Image (cartoon, rainbow, N blue to C red):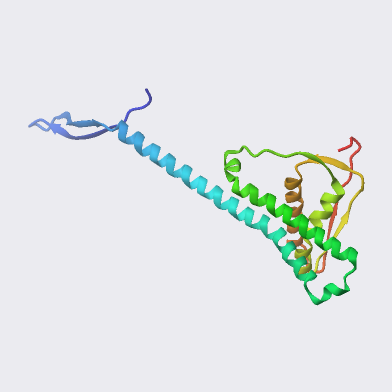
Length: 204
């Protein structure tokens, strides 16, 4: 049944001689009102937690979106500038691949935002596939190139070719980009950020 709450209003009673006789008053069962108040308070706290979670999600996603957007804008401006005529065909192709990879990554992030209900409900599913680890690292590094140039920081990627991993490419790429951008943020101007991976003895 649970607890019950009563609201009591009473005053002491005394005999003519001053002897205390007890209390006289009325009591009301306020259990329903009390439970309603507790329920409303719990709902208010839940709404506040949900609002804080959504605010944090938006802050994180704004950071996630900024990196591929910066890469797309930066390399598009480079290809459209006067310096483009001095680029080799290999450099042009590399810049175009970076724009393509950044666009695909941005598209995947937008799809996640549009389906944010899965994140809120905790039902996000990973899409695992075989991919080349070195290529994944190199794409992430290229997407952070614009941020590195702003801080005059050099990003050095030391990778091993021929290492296949099974993962959700979008998620792992997000992790790598966040690690690199955070390293750039806290590195001194003109410094170096090293990105590397190695294969353990157990094959992991």
